[in-house]
Image (cartoon, rainbow, N blue to C red):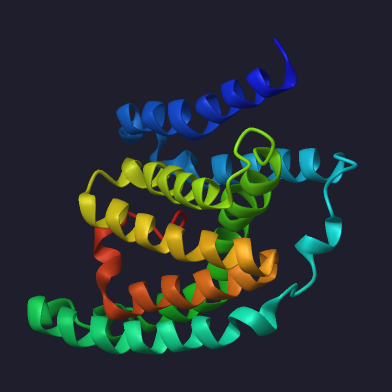
Length: 213
């Protein structure tokens, strides 16, 4: 098995087979989602840092943030305004229910979510995925779409199409940002904005926890 074939097998096993397996055993793995995420992040980090071809500054620098910051904030504020109005019309009972009914948990989420959930996800699905499979997926657009697809597939454990759809849309956005900024921190910022907004708005009801959005 050559290097290219090995990467394909790894991609299929880690990003397709494992999520599908997790879906069928989701009732038994509910308490293991977070540990699994952290372990996978640790493995991906080790492989990145031991790869001489990986540029480590991509993990700590803002990269080309100046070229994407206007789009990030403009799209977020426009999307937040639209989604607030739409969700308010469709589900007024749960509109901003999380911060209103569970203020303490919401405040904890604001602090913990970016570090404990977003950072591991972005390192795995963006930094690791884009670097590790660049050789077998040389087309940047292909990597963006496939990154978003496996990101959405990882959310199938929640067993609802809302979580998968939101994750695919977010995955496209975050992958596009990484492809143009080459910065893990920029993706963490964007993902945190959208993820925290989703839970603040009340759409977090479609997720069992905030660990993997």
